[in-house]
Length: 229
Image 1 (cartoon, rainbow, N blue to C red):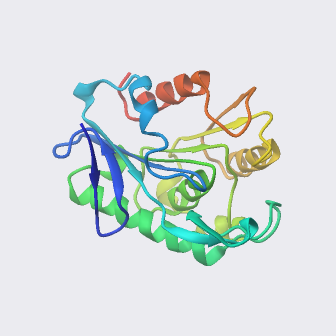
Image 2: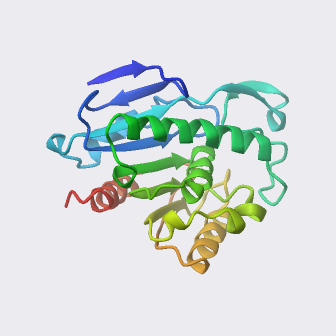
């Protein structure tokens, strides 16, 4: 069942059981998109209906984006320059992470334990998934981050949550990505592996997008993270 849901945190599009979910996947979209963006891939992930997995696709608030001349669009944080090496919008990142944490906490209140919740995201959404997932105080089932990079990296390793020390992480990137260069994903991979995290890394001959081969790998990883295989 597909329907819109409002919460005290972020409005979401939700797919799956409204009540009695056994697991949840919270999936954050990229810059300029909205929560509907990744809904169409769910049927291709191989998640059986009897597993009672609830997918939540939050809508980011619309804010001005400096890089785009101040154009207002859905975004998790502002981007001032195209270079990923520049300092990111720390306040915006943390505000979005706080909203996402509230959404995760609401899932726990609805009966889904944190170790049955996967936090996922694409591009900007993937950056927030890594930021919040690695700092979350309760152990998550997994973190899925696609075509993305680390934000606020200078504070990451003093803010890492010990609860996520063994949380599996799936990172994937396009080899020809013109928006978020492959080097950004590789740096995230290397930093996380260096910190002792379990990282599954995949690359695909694609740009800033998602392909059928990647969706197949995402489905296999999700089923493993949620113990469905």
